[in-house]
Length: 115
Image (tube, rainbow, N blue to C red; front, side, top):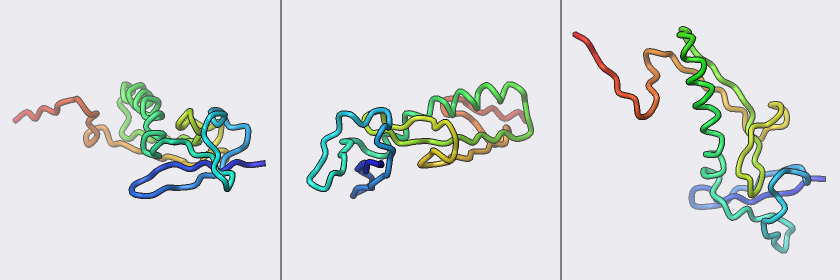
């Protein structure tokens, strides 16, 4: 059986189908249609996976590759926000990110140009 989670997004809401045993869906309020209101913005829920993406990028950048590509699945999990899915087939979103080291500068880092 599946649950339906409601997230705020932009000026409206989005409904997301989730497994009924999804981590973090114990506490949201259920409305008269049976939809679980997470009480969160979708953007805020997705922000919880940013540290994992940053850590992977920083760890691989030390290898000085010509290009870095990171792919992982993100699953929305009610009160828990978003979690990295065990497989992309279990994910609500599959994120594919790529960087070219000369073009990619991490936020907070300054670039210096010689010459």
